[in-house]
Amino acid sequence: MEISKSSVDNGAEERERLVSTLPMRQGFWKPYVLYQGYWMSPQVAKSVMLLQDQFKPRADDIILATCPKSGTIWLKALAFTLVNRSCHAVAGDGHPLLTTTPHDLVPFIEKPDREIHPVTELEALASPRLLATHMPFAQLPQSISDLGCRVVYICREPKDVLVSLWHYVNTVSDHFIELEKAFELFSQGGSFFGPVWDHSLGYWKQSIAEPHRVMFLKYEELMADPAKHVKNLAEFLGVPFTVDEVELGAVEQVVDLCSFHKLKNLPVNSSGKSDLAGWMPMDNSSYFRTGTVGDWANHLTQEMAHKLDSIVQDKLKGSGLTF
Image (tube, rainbow, N blue to C red; front, side, top):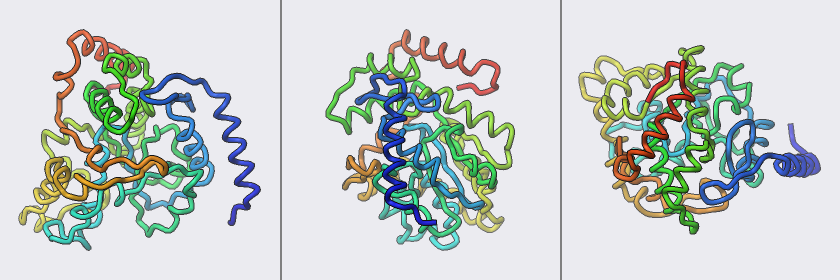
């Protein structure tokens, strides 16, 4: 059904009005508003509202969900490679990952800014669609659950998320934020799409309730035994490795192609720009730093680490989810 210009204009005015009523606080480099329990920029809040109203999922959609700086690019690369390996040989010189960024191969649903780039752009994608989001589970359109769309979520140790986010913001923004200030904001839940613990907890609980539909991964476990988890991911995505593939080393080939080191050093990821937001181009290299587990120890004091650990443990108490 075609949406009239007057309806679009009225919707934009209503979203603007609603955002103006939301609680606001200082974010990592710009003010954030609290929408449905999570902090985000006013622009992103309006984009999420529009998506919730207009996005039309398909039953065979696969949604890759992450909190920012928790392994988004890695998950996109792995899922794309696994789902498309029948038409793109993993060991071939012409694999799309060698010339196209994972962000361009697996688009976000809530960005670029959906007030500028219509949600209907997603309808042009062929099925089955691989789509990504930073939205918490509670903000996903209910129709995604109703249709049984599969969801893969990856979380990361919160201290490493904080350090990665701090580096990223200071790389892409003209506004420099001190680590102490970033720590304070993060500890209060005031990071992008935070609180991080609530973000992870929402998907964790759903993965327990619907393990056949929601897969929950931990960055650190995937890093420790990538072959094991890549095989499990392929199974969940409906494209399991055959016996012959395993014997011929296909699992290891996927792991190698999608490794942080491999992706970071590809020309497409070490140069050029991407405009994921639709209004702020960023260097592709800004999405790759170290990918190291435990890098937080090089930046946070023991006092900071203990304080954040205590907050996270308290927030996750009784859930079964630990870091």
